Length: 256
Image (cartoon, rainbow, N blue to C red; front, side, top):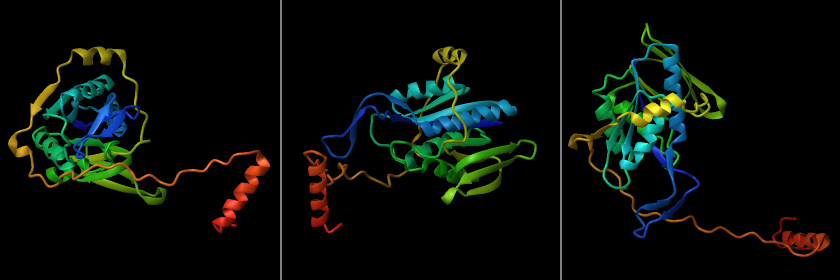
């Protein structure tokens, strides 16, 4: 069995994100890291390998040169190989472009199972995984919280979260694609042996061929900050004065 895990590099929440001068992009000051939802997907692939023979677990990511650090993090966690589909510059890459590039690579890789996080923390669009499945003609399930594989029959059983805590149970034939929900497992800390291996291991860098870049279907028109809501009011004085003032305000607003 060959498994492909799709990972994405996202800005760390402790950094400073601002709108660029053009108003059509963003600027980020801080560090980048692996998307947390993708960590659950990678951990699930590693657990599958612990329970059955797996030829390789490949981690693939699309983006500029800086995402190499995130691919190496996947190698440190235990991935067999890292694949970097490189892009130029820091321009926004739409989910369709990302999915098309990954599907173009995966279609030639002979993968039995493709895993991805349920969404990316930066745009929260949840589109790349299902798009890859559609392009490859694979059965798929999103928001998967439990999975089991029968390698002899080539059958995958999956449970996915839907509204009100209800689970939908599915069976599908391999090859298939799953987007993994958080909570399905607990991502491991990298072992020292994997960290040392990842430092020396070469990452496969690919340039997407022209056929893997679809016609542009969306364009960012503008970014803007949320409108300022009404500000809070701080009451001054002792407890009795604050209480009288509060009652007065609530009377004025016909609340009491």
